[in-house]
Amino acid sequence: MSESELLSAPAPTAMNYEIRPKPAGTSDAEVGGELLEVAMGPHHPSTHGVFRMDVVLDGEQVVKLKPVFGYLHRNHEKIAENTTYLASMPYTDRLDYLCSMTNNWAYALSVERLTGLIPPERAEYIRVITAELTRLVNHTCLIGFLLQDMGALGTPLMYAFRQRELILDLFESLSGSRMMCNYMRFGGCRADLPAGWLEQAAQVVGGYGQFLDEFQALISENEILVARSQGVGVLPAELAINSSITGPMLRASGVNFDLRKADRYGIYDRFPFRVPLGDHGDVYDRYMIRLLEMRESVKILEQALREIPAGPIIDPKAKIRGFRPKAGEAYGRIECPKGELGFYLISDGSPNPYRYRVRPPSLINLTVLEDMCLGQTVADAVIILGSVDIVLGEVDR
Amino acid sequence: MDEGLRNELSKQGVFTTKLTDLYNWGRKNSVWPLQFGLACCAIEMIAASMARYDLARFGAEVFRPSPRQADLMIVAGTVTKKMAPQVVRLYNQMPEPKYVIAMGACAISGGPFKQGYNVLKGVDRFIPVDIHIPGCPPRPEALIHAFMLLQQKIAAQTFTGAGRPRFLDPAGPSEFPVPEFGAHDLVPPNNPAIWRAPKVQRAES
Image (cartoon, rainbow over all chains, first blue to last red; front, side):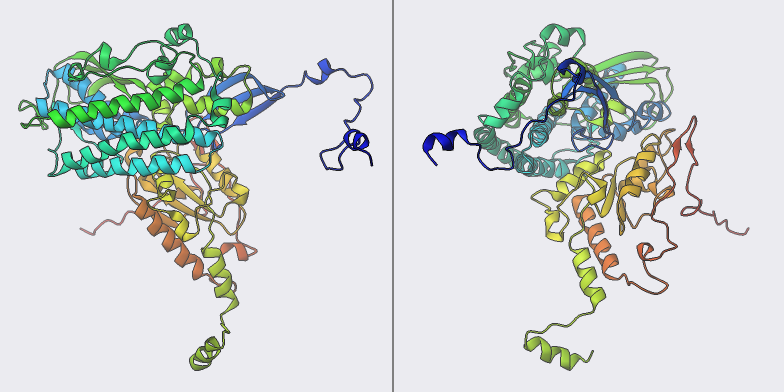
């Protein structure tokens, strides 16, 4: 066979099939008119829990998306209204079960606003340290899960969980529990740092920069990551503001709003740190923002671990028995790793809150899911959901 | 079999065993769990399969997203009344032999959320549970311990006789009725064939 014949003749492979002629009387327009409805979840490996997306597909494109919540509705608010203020603290651990420390802090802050308790200096430092460690845990795990959604099965998640275990060891020696810390109290913290804790924490934090370098070198330039995430799931800044999106998702869209800077709750005004901002608001920016935020958290942690003073860890006026705040209302909010987490409390002077409302960042960030997914493929919808960073314990409560 | 003969044979490179033991040995060392997380405990379940705890040492690292390929359902987290029909349906879709581990206080009894109006007070009201692990959430070591108990249970199963497992008994059910998410509660609220309310024993006064 001559060379020209070789080039023109089809190679004998299984891929070499002839496209079947269309049935008579059909056209492309009619074939493309059929829509497919798919219920993704509540049991689906990519939905990060028991969440359901009812997706309408045209071919592979998403034309409609309806989130269905409530598969993990655990009556958090109703239970909290029927129990004392302090007894709700363990329940806040189980809201966003990756970040129990920040949940504790948000609840403690709102009760402190209700009662006027003031945490002492050392407690404020401990709060900052545990909250920033929580941010490291959350962002590391989120990146692991996001890359798993993109098809990097196992490896990045293994790296993430290796790092997470180091921080959970710190939480365990501090509070007695790995995940459900139940550590903060109204007007301070429950127990002082154990001996040697600060040195151990400094060691973990000191090694974190190297881990981030390694992680970033392995993944950020990866061809598949770039191709799958750049320009996908764009959230315009205007829509983000109008939908009250908060947290890394808002900052990835280029809006400079971080409660640690805007509210300066606790002692965050003592820490010089930058707020990273994104340019495009796509999945890649949301991924990158989290990496950059972790580097800022490491800086805050290094400073806090260096400066932490000795002293009491709880306001002497705080009492556990007979805790009855005066009638009134209060709203405390903090920048938790997922966004603005707030607790709104109304007290009628009894030992139980009259109304207890959680402002969950995950749920409110989910409301723009359809806007981001329209026109994308169904495989992209999975990673867009992954980049929103939801935890169903907080979405459904 | 005579112990001396067995030793003699093993010196010659011939190992003898019972077919039951060989079959169970294979089964217990490759249990594939369903990749199925409900709430907080799912994170500890993932942690158990990661590098530090390494569930792969026990042959169970292959988490399958499809119930058709899974042998073990780890009910990791709170089962709400809205989710309970789906849990039972997933269990029905798994092929026999199948096992269930109820991981954590919520899956066992409703746990801290027991007083809630939307929380199922124990997954054993609808599906038969082999191992219960207490804890909120249980540590990964506790899951590994439950896993070793399950392996012991599998190794002790026989094929014939009265004590044979459900999947070898033609009269044994392999599917359980799926409850409906009714207007006020699940309909029916439990499966009376496998669960009955515990009788409260009162001391004679």
